[in-house]
Length: 166
Image (cartoon, rainbow, N blue to C red; front, side):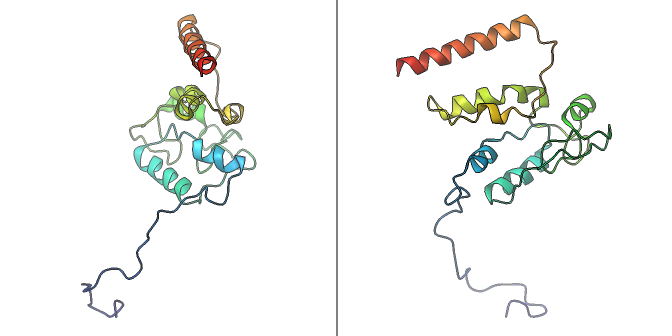
């Protein structure tokens, strides 16, 4: 048996091998599942990003029902599941919002404001109607420059022209 003491080598291959990969949206095609699959994990380190992606992939990722308390500012502002630090604190201190360590952040939080743009361009012209739902926890600052808004407006207009041509 493989559980015998000292038996560390295996002589045969694994008995049951998966023919197909697990799909988390095979039976659950709800809007909540689509929202979870489309979520961009920003403000976390590489390790935590891998953990969150694994949870999404194998249907273990659960959304929060109400905001949690941030360990830095002690306010109920943490709206992302499995995070311990709110977005403003994590962005200001440049630490991982999930583990709180000063690791290299893979996708910075300020880039997360373009979250709906990346989702709509990835999905193509047929949108799923989740654009408004994905932005519920995005913080928009009033200090955006006019140049950024002009660039976003040009991208939006080009997307609208692509949709009308099809």
